[in-house]
Image (cartoon, rainbow, N blue to C red; front, side, top):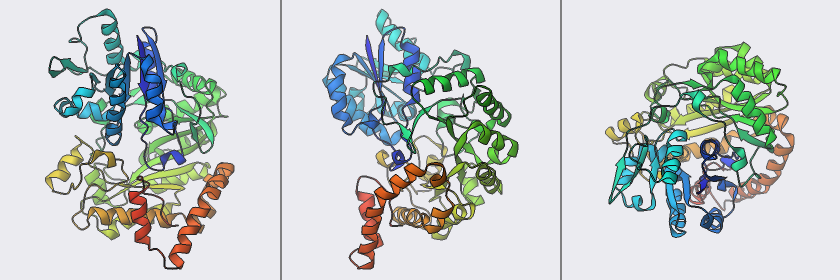
Length: 485
């Protein structure tokens, strides 16, 4: 049997300008079946014409896996059509197929999908491949949905794996190895834990893993870092759901990186503001280990919004966290969510002022998004605030709800304006990106300068308005963050 695992070619608008990451989940799946079959992974989001790439190679495979978040699902179906025309079977996995498997099974999409691997995929996918090779029934494969005649059968869910049962990823399975960079440096991902015990209403993690936190042995993590470096990485991203749930362990990991002589690599992660703010000693150790970028989930300055999002209190955590990180010469990105039920224009602009006050290097002004099956979606639907159900726009950057005071278009425009106005001369002076990555920064500035100069000229001459540019960005392929600057 020959198996091909495809990443989604769809990414968040503008995200790949800063980081283009190879898919970690797929090489983890490959590491669990490479003794059973020939398995390849294709990270096709680095391809200019991903559908053509798939057409050119798919004839050599028997089973093709596709993974999708909600905004990637429709493109996964288009790729599945190509796969089915080539005569191969399809298996879907990832967040959206896991959370919406019942709706998918009852829709016309089901004809394009032979199997759905729900939740954590490694053991389920291995058992699926093994059963097919041996000609056994699939009825005992936990976590699997499959066709039985004219209907889909949904086997019982699979319990979460013990972290010790999860094998190392197989990066040798990758067909495409070029074009994956962050700020000009080749990058790969290494996970140190899975899951989160918190109950944020907008998040689907606890629907995938439950409110559980599982940690990989630190020795495994350092070995995985070494493997990623051996495959060309100069930068490592830790995609853990909440790496700062155990602050002492993260400090131990940093010390292990130091002891293993791996501080020459550049490390990046996402973290909670409260976790980072809880320990200056931790952040000092992160700086010593080689961390130079942290994405903080700040979410909002407004306590009412934090309560709605299920984030509890945040108070001064964000300010202290950013200070600790900046003191260690670490780039700070923040996620700030606007468009919550009681937000008016002033309420959304509060996030802009917070980012300015904190001198955030790369703020991401997210828009509250009613992801399928989440508690937040249920509450927003009950309030009658969900306005759009086109999941291709459920990427956190498009407005799919209104508030009690603003339409979805007004939310979108305010968010566009915040992006347009943030990157001014003051930001140019203080941001750490240009200090840590001067070559990338200069190249990006030269690339964007003509674009923004043309827009400025059109505004000054009265040829275009800001609303014109807003609509152009919104309608021009989904790049909603360009602005005018």
